[in-house]
Image 1 (spheres, helix red, strand yellow):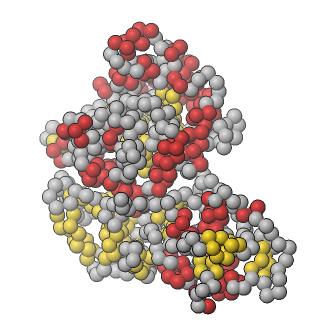
Image 2 (image 1 turned 30 degrees about the horizontal axis):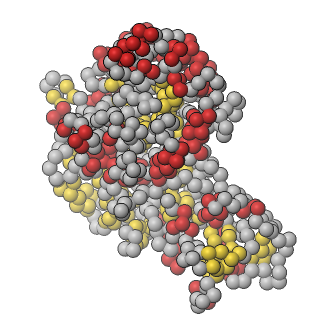
Image 3 (image 1 turned 90 degrees about the vertical axis):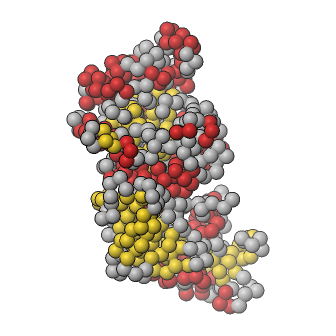
Length: 637
């Protein structure tokens, strides 16, 4: 909606770390922003909100990356930019997002005092509305500012903000069809002029950027009072690349069958509204993105019909993304990560998936589970159990040939039986990430309003661990066993996840107590699974560049010397290194032996390698004298 500047929990981890192919020592680099248009999964994070402190903004970015939220929709305010070409506040916040590997959709909105009509300012004052929502009196000035901002954040290395962060898509205003966000009242002719001029300014500064129309409400038309019909009549279809919509349905489930009347051809469910928007946009050959949608847990602070439970919020979030994928919608930005309005925008603000104390709500965990299961999946179609108005069953396929079925009931709990493919490993995954391995030829599933996932993986062995409730399968299990298994690498700490490396590629990974295994299908087996650079990353977290550590020019008798890093490897670490995979498993040494406190607080002799840290335990028997540090557990947020 219209706004401005305005303990024990399962933490689903999808963090952005460094990938590495053996052979060349390297230092961990900041993750790159995703290339290309946004994926399905986005969030309104409001990291650029001036209400947030730098510490809160950084904490929220970290929380977003943990659940795989790789795209955000952010406000950039003309009214608070200033008269200079640069704005250090936005440079800092956009740089923070870019450094975390998060793609950005930028909203260009609000009007500085010098471009507000005095009559509009008087109207705003009389109606207790912010005057910065007054429509600009000079659209050319707005377009000049747009071009200036786009140039600063186009990532081409010329006149860029520090670090050359990139905003890949630009949304022209927000909710221009609403009187409250286009004062004194919505005006399609004035907005058409803004959109046409801003489009030209964006494309001149960054021809590869996408331009979104300002997000409009969709119910029985595209925009209030068919707002976008009039905009297109004046500005033409060539004035934007993407139709941005806000199909808010805050008082109902997204697919509530009571909102469908086939006889009257009336369907205002989320799927119905998406189809309406798609039909409209198809006239101009435009895709449709959902840039705001959500469900509020506002409790007694709002009308009862708007106050949903925490479980309903989480359920409806997942159902909406799945329904959007089934409708062919490329991108959805859920509203929002944390309520930057501090409760002032009811009932919309409490749609946030993190509370004001930055505690995750069930919807936060549901978002992470959803991304982990579906991020690389392709929607295939309706599943055999699907019964319109009663039971939802949507099927997705993975790049490796695996499948993920998503099911929920629209009302009473129902029993579903689905066949399990022979030779595949199968698991039932709950909305919040709990995983139950399945065996046999049929999965018997009790389905309620809470979505569940039935995942079936291609043939391959698997092993489940009661200690953590997790399973290791296929190529990860083979690599874990080659690397020494439980004794050397430890227990699994996460299911298989998707993370993005410094090269911008997203890969399947799985974390263990002492390593992070990464799947690199571009490499021939067995190098298709590599250990992550945990030694490099751990040193970097402590502010240490491994290249600054003291080096040696040769090795003593019985030791081995590595000119690539100018370090030696001696007993007892050398025997352990060679016996358990050597260079491919641990990488080059990055230090000489050091005395450091380890996880237990004891001071031990350690040595750093690219992918691990060795510890010498002199009180242990010979077979256990050398152990790997629990860097996986240390680095896992």
